[in-house]
Length: 434
Image (cartoon, rainbow, N blue to C red; front, side, top):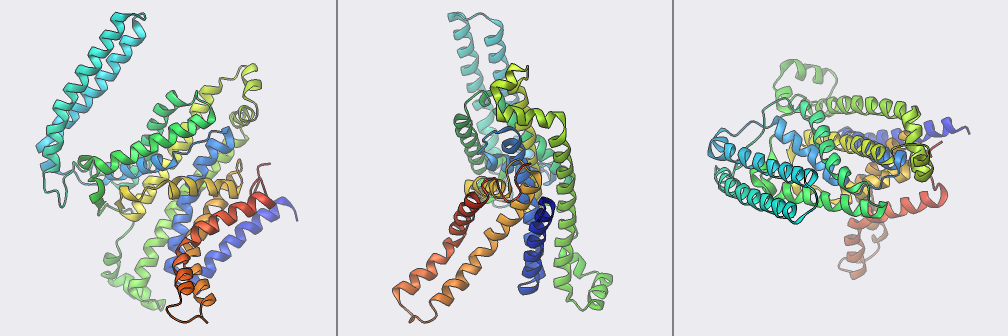
């Protein structure tokens, strides 16, 4: 079998698994899986750009995805007028004061020679700026969070169409990646991993605790969506008539129609990104990145600016993850900071890239589909398997109860087993780099 036929066969098997899910369970379940598979594939593309192209070990994927989710809130949620009147101006002035303090301290450090006077000036600026920042920021935040905290208690967003948040999510993640890259990309790979993980955790901590920005653990619900609402479709006589003509219940048809619309939008984004990633891979820029990945010393000897190229690809990969985060929040219709966990948004994405094939864009897409499918479907399969194994045991049997309770851990067991099998029999992934 040729390599291209093998790859087509792998994608065909993945398609058959999704079709079987639709026929054996429901098409609603299958389309829901497809939508999250598409978003997962986009995340895997972003990580593959960093690791597969350039060898950058970024374990802070969760933070960039969360920033994309934050962008969806800041762009699409309606502004809370009362909160803005209560403390919005104070928060803006405080943030500008903090930024000015950092800029002034940086200018002093760069423009003055190293001396005791420079150190004293920097400390004075930083301490004074911090005290002024807190004096402006704290009262404003308290005023904002006291405005109807059960329903709002935050500033809201700009009230713009939510699809605008997708590129904004990418830009927000790219900006954070630039800041991280300027400070951490000179570090050794293991230190870079620690730095990105730490910054991702800081990002999540901010989203959970800064209620004025994201409502914290109270969550932001009711975000606008780029597709019709099911209830509007069910109240449309034309739609109900078309659904009846197809022999489908109007409620089920409306849900399928909405999910199918999301699938078209997400698939279009994935195709565009995949084409761009392939063009980048085959370009001189892509060949240079792989040369740097394989031997940094030799690339530097040939005049390549390794740190600058690493910064470029780190920003691009993070922007793709931020874009995926905004898309996922759009699909959910809400931002829940507590759900951003490293297991789901970092470890799982890395498994997708490794299993699919590091350095191969199609492999990353296949890994995104396969691993998310297994992550969702394995748990109910585990319950069925354990019920079948324990069918002959008496109710109340300690072993039976233990096995049934252990079925919830089938996800983790399966991820580990898949990873081991792929690394043993196909160490470079299912679709390896050429």
